Image (cartoon, rainbow, N blue to C red; front, top):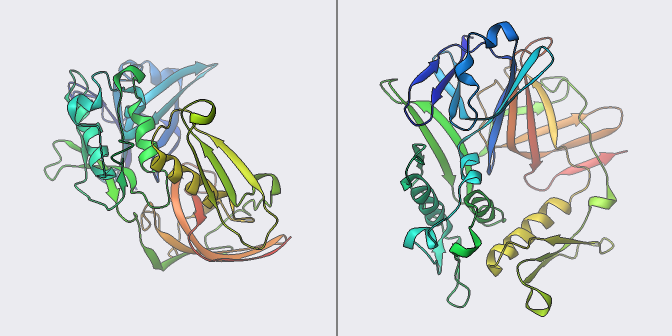
Length: 363
């Protein structure tokens, strides 16, 4: 495989380098997050690439066999001893550095019974309409039936609170019945420019895959950690939001499942909308009410699941068997990191969450 790292000025579009010699490269996307890239440069290579040291306005891409597979912004560059390390994150990370300075996204809000996908598009439109703020990100025209705001409790962007757009994006995709997103990057058809995209999925991104699988002894190369932590378990989550005393907003998500009742309090002081707060409580409960899940596996590139064959959000049948545990079930891919220079050959570290009813035994 031919791989190269390209960098570009975020505003002018000027190409800074077409073959940045990054070492210890690791990169990949996330579900409902930007994904990340890390790498390092030796001093002799840095002297040839000084334009890179401009975090916050340099774009970086990974191209493999002529196809861009990851893109984002360089956010952190630092030196330690004989090594310069670089950290980048994909397109949605930009919104965490932007705020609503006009109020209601310059007249687009407040929102009552509005599709969350529309609010997400409005945030990007607003952010990229301000001088020197156009990153060139396209947001999918996806629509959903997941609504935000009510007549008595509109979803607002009040200027005096200087709302952080990245935090608002996180809120809008945080629940069980909210849209999904991931960041993608590709060449345009003529390969003269780059298409930066926020992919929106409703009711979800990804699909149930019957053509690939993750299996110990086939493509899983390390025994994953399976943690049974009662301290982290809860089937009742009480989320509190904005306000003080009796005016403090509060939403509870709870199930009865034959286990001793365990509760978790989630403090989200910046959330004013009850429906958003309820969605966050439900999402937190969904994560906490499972014990013994496989959360991360390390793969080799094999025909059972070739690198590039899976997408963010896919459900893949996963079998983990070792001296301590036996796990079999559908797991949803929530992100991954490709390590092309790993010892013994390229590796993919896959992040997983339970996708459906699963079977667990052992320990």
